[in-house]
Image 1 (cartoon, protein in one colour):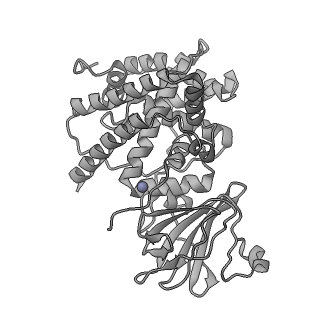
Image 2 (cartoon, each protein chain N blue to C red; image 1 turned 180 degrees about the vertical axis):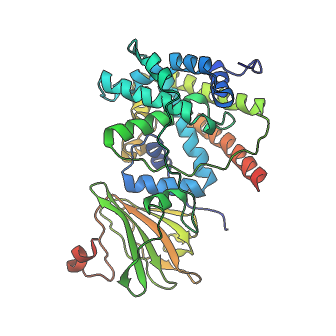
Image 3 (cartoon, rainbow over the protein chains, first blue to last red; image 1 turned 90 degrees about the vertical axis):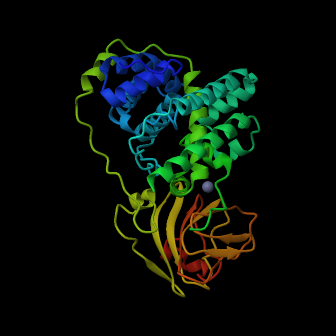
Length: 185
Length: 211
Ligand SMILES: [Zn+2]
């Protein structure tokens, strides 16, 4: 594994090693981190242990196979894994493909921008802290929303979403997207 | 292209990120996000929130063999999923719903056409083709309806909707959208309730048109 710039998280480092070097040791470390969390996450919405492990297996394989789509300047590892996990869960449980947005064009081989990666990680860290500091009933609502247990009507009647942090993430994400599209033209 | 001014509300984006929208709305959101940077950024922010929930979820011990199972499968080639590209005015997710083929238009009269993409328990989603000056078939107001403009534009009491704009209409909105001058307006209309056309298809005929 390449030595990463010091402050970049180990998860991002492993993910980049998987993406760029097809590094199996790094992948095994990602497995150790994510598989138990994924299993817990999936079981919370009522899926039994056996089926949850099938989904965990699918998610981990998708992480390996679609690694080239991971862009640390836009998505933090857990956010990327979350999206894959929800897609797989829906595929397996509802037997339908969920419509997904177009992928953005490839970043034209630019060097990873460590400060951008760090900014993305920091925002995600702040969001996680904000989540942990919420009152239990508020946190419960947020968790239900992202576990896919609330309808959009139910979400819109909730006021507990930590919107401040989400908004700053949006600003950051938007800047990056605009920059990337400009580069592509 | 003019700037997109009508966006997806945050609750819809959050439910979409969590994979919990009825399929017709999911398609409308996927198509809008494909066209709209602002909503893409908001969608990605919701994924970060989802990631935080995943990170703070209580871990469950996985079976002993799972890791070696997964590691053994790394070299097994995956079934290639076909990635549908944007085609003309149709964003990738719409092309996917069309299975890569052009829309099969059916006339609704007055030059207005529709092409049903799906119609089922979760609602329906269709493409509409409206020549300039014609009314957009007045959609169901039983539930929520999302209309995404893909070509041309339409206007109603609430404003003008151009390419990429998403109109969110619920029961409370009585409106008469009319296609503006210029090329025919093509839009994607998704609803979670059976559609009915108030304006020019008598209700008795609805079963014939599958609306
Ligand atoms: Zn938008």
